[in-house]
Image (cartoon, rainbow, N blue to C red; front, side, top):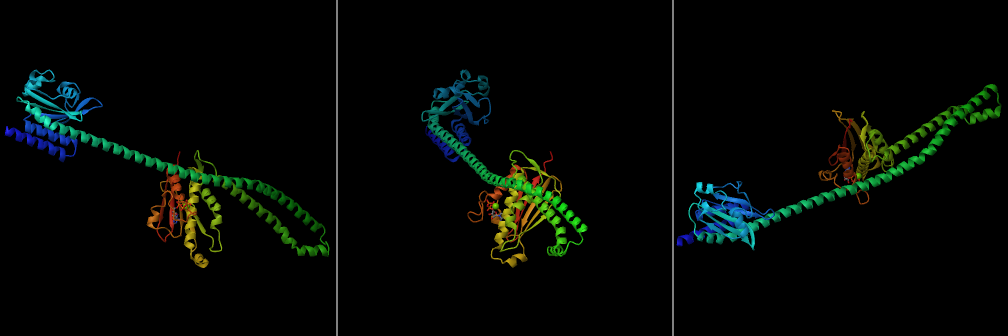
Length: 472
Ligand SMILES: Nc1ncnc2c1ncn2[C@@H]1O[C@H](COP(=O)(O)OP(=O)(O)OP(=O)(O)O)[C@@H](O)[C@H]1O
Ligand SMILES: [Mg+2]
């Protein structure tokens, strides 16, 4: 009797330590079944947990003769066999007549293995079934086995419930985390869209203005240019007529000769046609400018067009001319172009021009900043420079545009953040910190290229735009 009591205490202690010391449910239940085998002389012991959704019992642990949990009894519907029946009735069960028990699924197996007894106990917590613990033995069992199982079943049931709640918590925590992450991504996307909208609004306003001005210029320029052509012919006729007079009347008299000398007639006759043709050249230039302005602002949001990047760069420089030219405080910023022969690139031209505009404007800003505190003479000695170089990659699969300035450059910290949304080192009202993040998006996401920067403090900055050539 004392011995039995001692075993009972030891058994309980084993179960307690399993429940308190082990981490995962399979580990805990495995130790519990091992304790049943050891302390109750079972041939093997098993624990199933209830999957309430599917109304089946799932084998979680097995010790003794069988240790696998993936055999034919790994899933037992509630009400089927002995285990299912215990689950359904929520009643413990003990039999010493396994050989003839109809609820035993394989009695041949029982005879073969000499399994004569079976005991099972429902695992219940707060009136709810969470699983079943059961054992087979090769010797007769008395009712005290059920008493012992009763002693631990509540604890095991609590352990199962606790772990299940923990797992559910972890799962919902993970789902929450995923949701939060998803929200963060959505927010990021929204910010990007907003950013693009602001910028494209800005660009389309600029584009409309530029296109409008270009259009307005076109008419008067056409009118002047047409009249100059007419005037050239007319002036030619007049000159010929004058020459005829000179031939026929080689002695026109003192007054006319004096006037011819006063107005330097010979020079005038030679110069007037030249004057007119240079006016014509000027008109043609204005017309070219207005054409490229219209190309610059061309609406190409829906499809890519084949474009000459040099044209885009030149037009951008032209639009920025007012910032490049000489001022009281400094000489003009020198622009050095090294254009290679590159093929036209299929692109959203307006958007790429926007990239050129952002990068060249930044370069001018950087140069202006480097001029702070330097005299005109000092700047003249080390002039502000922007170099623009284009080249085709060796494999001829992409083109490269490098835009470099000899401004102050940037620190490592600044450089690591320049492509961040809203990052700026400029004064409020001067910079919004959108230029480069938009540019990178246009180059990388819209064109599948890359936009990189190399710079160090005191060494200027170089931005490289790589654009893949679309061979189709
Ligand atoms: N050529 C450059 N030399 C030195 N620093 C530069 C250069 N280009 C960009 N930067 C740095 O990168 C920052 C971010 O540039 P970005 O064009 O994105 O924004 P921003 O010019 O400040 O404002 P925005 O372009 O929206 O008007 C700048 O504030 C500046 O500190
Ligand atoms: Mg900028």
